Image (cartoon, rainbow, N blue to C red):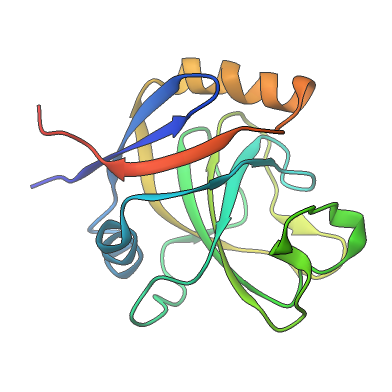
Length: 167
C-alpha cells in the first residue's frame, strides 16, 4: 500500500502531497517516514536551480546510503542528501549553525519544483541525491510559492514534512 506525506510551506500556507517511493528507495523512504514530522528553515538552492530544502539533524538509525540516485531531478522529486563538513563555506550564506561546524553531519531534505536542475556544486562536484518520493498533488501551487521564495526571500519560511492523512 502506498504511503503519502505532505510538504508545507508554513508562512505561505501552501501544502503538497507526495507518494513515497518505497520500491525504488526503500531505505530512504522508511528512514524519512519513521522520523516524521520534520521541520526546519527553508533555503532556496543556489547551484541546483529550482530547489527548496531544509537542513535537519541526522535522524535515521542507520544512514540509508545511495539508492535511486539522480543528478538531474525533475519537478516533483523529493531528494535526500547527507552532508558532512561541506556546508561551512561562508559563500553559502547560512545564518544558522548549519554551516558552522566543519565535521557536523546534516541531512538536506529537498524538493524540486521546475525543470533543468543539475546537482553540481562548484566546491565539491557532483552531488547525487536519493529520490525517495514524488509530489502527486499541489505541485503547481508549491512551485508558485517556491518561485516567490526565490524572488522574495526565504526569511521566516519553514518547511514541514508530515505523514499525510489517509483519504
